[in-house]
Length: 214
Ligand code: AMP
Image 1: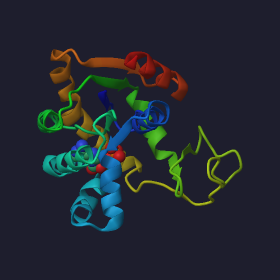
Image 2: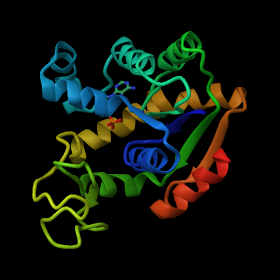
Image 3: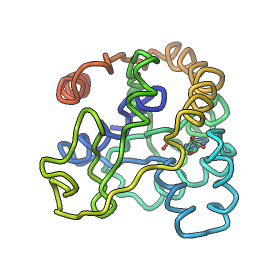
């Protein structure tokens, strides 16, 4: 099964994708993670993308679509794909159709996480992750059980995304509204869209998504 998780920044796409990876053995294809890895490694794509990402704007359709194509090419034919943070423009949605067809795959569902935008800035500006294993935490909603120690791996190193500051988050929201939300009708016409209340707890959202994939 190949699905898209769609929703504004902070809607919980990454968290839910990780749940699907853990519970259903699907693969998460996050263009944001791929780009951050490229930035970290200082590759030509990373060097090009860094300033754009720091501003909260969108990286070019070609770059992100090439990343997705390469990941799918390296994937097992029977692993399901979760597209997290891709497509983000109508052009990318068109490119994804072509890419999926070239890998003999089809799109089964587009799951939109519906959220209250006012809550998103609060969610995003408080989040941080374990620098070693990537487990997610939040200043106000999910501190590690022992302060300063990761619950999962015991590491004491944590990190925050440089684009998780209020100013950049506002730009990321505007980009979502202007360029990403308009792709929903494309998928609605194809009868692919399912909606989930993204303001519910992580477990409830994950249960709702599982119900849709049964
Ligand atoms: P994310 O981790 O999905 O929030 O993405 C972080 C940043 O990476 C975004 O604000 C964009 O600058 C860039 N990015 C990630 N995915 C895409 C995409 N599909 N198209 C364009 N830019 C992207």
